[in-house]
Length: 391
Length: 49
Image 1: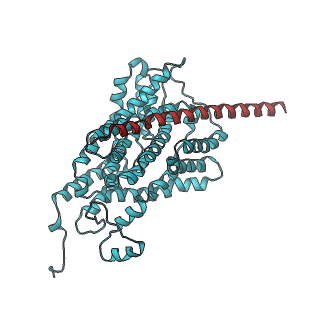
Image 2: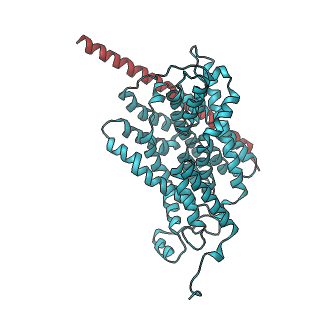
Image 3: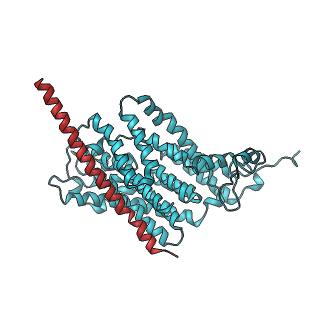
């Protein structure tokens, strides 16, 4: 009987065991430490699913990339004969075609509240300067010789601190690195409260951190809220046409949210719709992390570079705010610039906490939410710029 | 072999990003001011009426 029966024990490698431990850590961090659980739990479980040998969920071609069917007609035969796994299909039709990240932007837009950015448009400048980490890390990664130019751009984009654009660009330019890059992007986003404060303290004086800002941000009218996504989309699309899929979906989702007459669509896009896409994304990204693909020198480098990207983006945002302060009579607290790194709303919360610690009268949350949301726009623009240059 | 010319070109994307967002900043400011003014006028009109 056992001659016909094949167990997985004999095919387990040390690599598989290491990957199972990594998956365990991710699931632990997600469930018990609340580190981006919506992504880390599916990614962790996806890693388990593909690291139990003989499961056949993800089959790799000899070139190290997920196997694909030559034609759609061939697909069913390939599945039946075990040449293609179910994760191969999710990867080929969901990620490689960029449909999943593309639709996630719609859901994200429906969840985004841009009113703090509209109330204080200077926030857009901090959202731009906080993309510094993307380009510094791109230069370091490419200069190291470990990454091709396309791969380096995707590693750098982790500095945008926004997961979906990173996945969108990596699926297009360097799909072989999708697993480690997505993992680094989401893990470090959860570490923003640890990474940002020392950088902020290092680059600001106590006096700067104490700068008081009046708590109320001006009320934004419905007309402005409706005009904002339309105008932003048209202007960005004209200057950076390759960002149309990202910024278009993001702003369309946001328009659904603010019209007041499409609440049902906005609620669906921001709840069940994005949830389904998120766990498909998480599982597929986890499914890309088999031991042979993940346990490489490049993965270690990505983990180190991702931290650097976050550090430099925080510096960029802070310096942007300090620069603007040179011209303002009523100074702003430069810490709100650091929230331009996106990572919504964690970065803004860090600024709020540090602001209150420095000056208990300060309530910086809404001031920091402006740059925080502007960071989402900034990252979308940068993604379009990189896509246009490299694809 | 690292192509530093290409690196410089791609890094210029940071500048493009800043310019595009500054343009958005200017447009958002103008639209904000215009909408606020028109709404203030509307309210004044309502009060007079």
